Image (cartoon, rainbow, N blue to C red; front, top):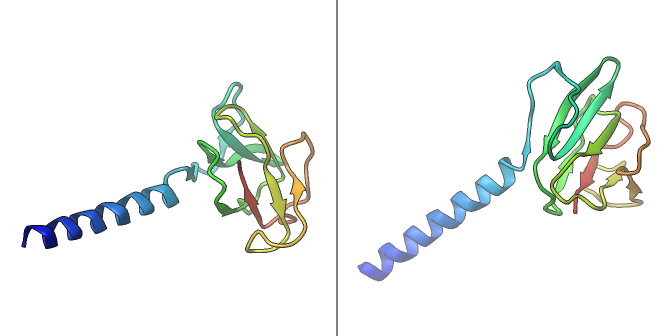
Length: 115
């Protein structure tokens, strides 16, 4: 009985960790949050007007959706190195480095992977 309870507890803990990992690092922001300097983490911005449209606290290598209104990003902190963007919904195909001070048309990149 005790062994069974331990297995159930371990399974629930693993599910909780997986859920938190998938939902916490890339947190949505309130619409209309203005540009601020300095900021924290990987921050996605819209161009007109310049507003924060998404952020990620730390790199994790997970394929994530680029925020719909994002047209540029800036890695303020968190140890972000490479941030390749993809024009596909599953991070497949040709990768283009987004973390190099350039912008793109709204909706041009669909996914990214931060490491």
